[in-house]
Structures are given as C-alpha cells and as structure tokens.
Length: 113
Length: 113
Image: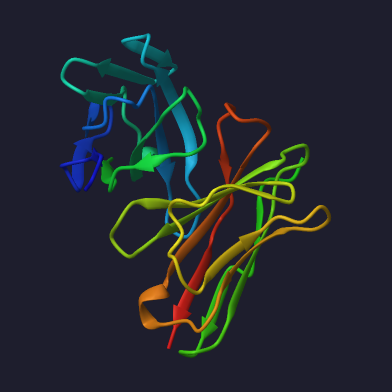
C-alpha cells in the first residue's frame, strides 16, 4: 500500500523554464510534507517543507503548494538550472514531525542547458 | 560541524554472513532513524531510536534485523544471515528533537553475493 505516490518517474525541462514535480498521498493523518533532493551515491538533502495548516511555502526558487482536499502537493522550481538535475523525493509525516517519513518513489528531473 | 557519518560506504557480504552498518549522528542530535532504499524505489522507514531506546521499529523486518543506539558510540544496524534481497542502500538520519527535520548521511550500499 503506497501512501505517497509520485506518478512521474522522470521529467525533462529546459534551463530557465519552470519545473513542476507532483506528489499525491492517501493517508489523511499526514500533516507535514517535505521535499528532498538526491544526487547519485549521496544521501537525500532537505529542500523545503510545508505544514498542513498552510497551502504554500516559498524559499528562493523553490515553492511547495499543498491542496489538502485533493491530497496533492507540488514542487515548483523556477527558473530551473542544470544543477537542479537530480532525483526529487516527496515525503510525509504525522504529528507535524519532520523525521519519521513516508517517501514517494521519486522523480528524476533533468534540466537541459 | 560534521554531518551524519555512515560507514562503511560500501559493504559486500556473502549470503549467510552478518552485516554491520554504523551511523554517527550530527553533534547534538539524539534521535536516529534508519531507512532502506531498494533499487529503483523510494526510501522506506525502518526504525527510530534515541539513546539506548528503540522508539519505533514498525518498518523493521521481523527476523534477522536489529538496531541499537548505545549510550556511547554510533548507532548500529545489524543484519544477520544476509540474503540477496537485503542488497540495498541503507540511510541513516538524525535530528535534534522529535519535530526537527532529519539530516541524512551518505548511505551504506550493501551488496550480497
């Protein structure tokens, strides 16, 4: 039973354009959501998070949107840069805790120069 | 301030041997989490420990796997009598408290031959 799903295994965008990565969840008990970036042979690096009491959180080029009624969140990267090429994982937790996480399967983003 | 340190980075074991994976959390972090990433999948939560205590082991396989976080020294994930299906990347993360975001180590890649 996959509680967090990233339905697009890969995404390719042109440098300078917007990258939109999507994530769906099924467990209504989740109340805290995070995005991680992962390069090959490295551990995940925290990017941005959002609590369920908000619908948007912005940090520089990264914005996360949360639609609780649809159980859907998305990560927007604008403008996209070649260094953003990596695998992006969506993760969710309960009790507003950013540590015991349920991860999606990841989306591989490729930003072309 | 050193990050989360995992060793070894790569570990090869023959079927039936024991694997020991070590994790030193970030300085000042007393909460440790272990995750496993099978090939082409997302990370799966295994166990959450604080010093000398297992808090949540709901993601640990019932047999052959154990974890500890002693008063002194690193956290250890032990896999006894390894099988080919145990081949994966094992990531450790640490956080300063129950709600702080977790920081991940670079992982240990276990290969069972």
